[in-house]
Image (cartoon, rainbow, N blue to C red; front, side, top):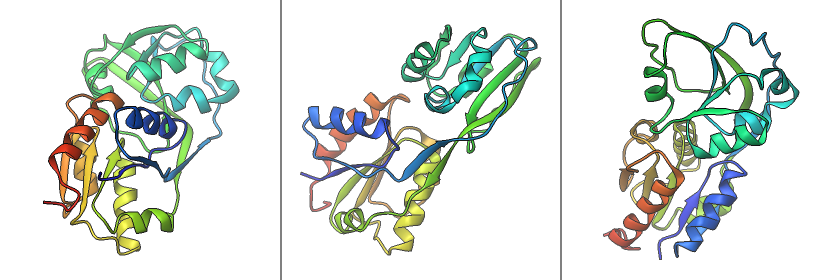
Amino acid sequence: MRPVIVIRPEPGNAATVAAARELGLEAHAFPLFDMAPAPWTAPDPAPYRALLAGSANVFRLGGEGLARLTGLPVHAVGPVTAEAAGAAGFRVERIGEGGLQPMVSALPPGRYLRLAGEKRVPLAMPDGVEVDDIVVYAAAGLPMPPALAEMLLKPALVLLHSGEAAAHFAAESARLGVGRAGVSLACLASRIGLMAGEGWQHIEIAQTRSDQAVLALAVQMCDKVSPEGH
């Protein structure tokens, strides 16, 4: 069976690997990012209608400053982020699908606070909507370990959950001279596939922006693409 490589940071990596193995995939954990809190100061929550959160890392790594903002309702990008918000003491008002942009596009006029990572997707604001961004965590790319580089010498499938992960994986592959012709990519969104670049054996996009959808795509791709890459 073609190995399935998971490079997302922890704790998501372990969860994805466990779910993949339950589906019968030969999943391997190689986190290529180290997540860490960033210094920040919580603003006065009074001017804001709600808090926008595009990642569960906001609540896992946000630290003590979050306590000042728990009175704001949360618009969470998905169920995992919503669960993390609830665990941190926030009330979740809305759980979106398909990323933050569709959720932002439907916001009523007002001023919102977005807590995010250092690298984040730019948003197009509808009329009357103002969003202030504050960075509360950062992801540092890690070198590709030799064991992963060796595994990629044979046909493999890599799961990509973010554009930053795609770009970093592509850069590390180039640095180590890893060929792309035998490596296929299962991506959470079309932007991620674009950031991975060209030359990979296959690039396919999940039907929805969820880990479950990426794993379902991985099952399909492993069935469709033979270990020899034909």
